[in-house]
Image 1 (cartoon, rainbow, N blue to C red):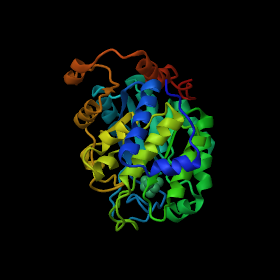
Image 2: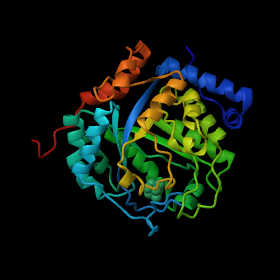
Image 3: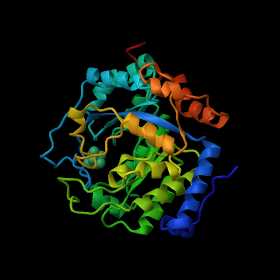
Image 4: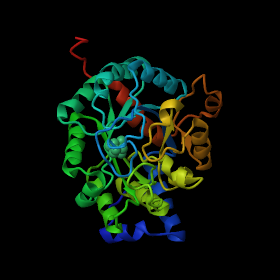
Length: 365
Ligand code: SF4
C-alpha cells in the first residue's frame, strides 16, 4: 500500500509546475493512493442551486451583490423538494444544496433538510456561505445536514482581501464552527486569480492540508461576464490538476471533485481530473430556467449531465458509486458488487451519514 505523505514546501513548489513524464508519474502516484484508500469509485452528487442572492462581492463571480444586471431567484421548499426527488430517482448519492450567501434561505431549509434526510433518504451537503453565529451551523446539523463546503478560495490574507473584499478571519472562523458543529468540512482554492503567485498556491496547499478537510477542491479561474475580472484569461489547468494530485497524495482519502470548470476550459478536462486522483462528480440537477441565472463562474457554464458523468467515469476505468434504480436501467445493468476498499468508502460517505438523522427538533418533540 502507498502511504499518504507530506511533501516539503520545495517539493510542492516543484510538483505544481511539473509537465510531461514527471506529471504522469505524479498522477500515477495519486491514483495509487486513491485506489488504496478509497477504491476506484466515483461518488455522484446531485446539485440544486436554490438561490442566487448573495451578500458578498467576490470579483470573479457575477452573483456578487453589486451586480444589478443579474435577475435573482430563490426557490420555494416545494420547488427544492421536487428536484431532490428527481435526484433520488436518478440514483445519485447525495443532495447538494448550494446558494449565494443568502441567509433568507435558512427559513426554507428548516422545512427542506429534514424531509430530504428522513423521508427522501439522502445525505445532505450544503454550500451556503458564512453565517454570523456558530449556532446557525449547529441548527443545520439538528435538521439533518451532514457536510458543508466553505472553500477558502485564496488563503493569502491580502489576496483574499483584494479579491473577495472581506476579512479572511471570518471565513476561517466559520470553517471551525462547521467542524465543531459536527459536519464534514470541504475547502479548496481557485487557481489563476489575478495577483496570485505560485507561492500563494503553495500556501493554499498547506493551509487546506492543516484543516484535515473531508473534501478539498481546486478550480481553474474562469473569467465571468459582468465582473471586474471579465477580461482576465483562464487559469492554468495543469497547475490545477497538479494541485489536486498533491492533495490526494498528502491527505489520502478526502473527497476530491473533478469540477465542471475543467471541462469548460478543455474537452476531457474532467477525465483529466479523475486521472489526477479525483473521485467525485457533481451532476447539475437545477432546472434550466434557474440554472442560467446561477452565474457562479460564467453564464455559459459546462452543465454536467448524468450521461457525461457515466462516460467520463468509464473512460477513467472507474465505477460510479450508485445503487441500481429503476429509472436508470443502463446504470442498473452495469452495476457490480464493490470491492472491500470501495465498500468501506461507501460506508464512510453514504451509509454512516444516514445512521444519524439529526437530533429531534423542538417542533418534533
Ligand atoms: S463566489 Fe459565492 S460568495 Fe462570492 S459573490 Fe459568488 S456566490 Fe457570493
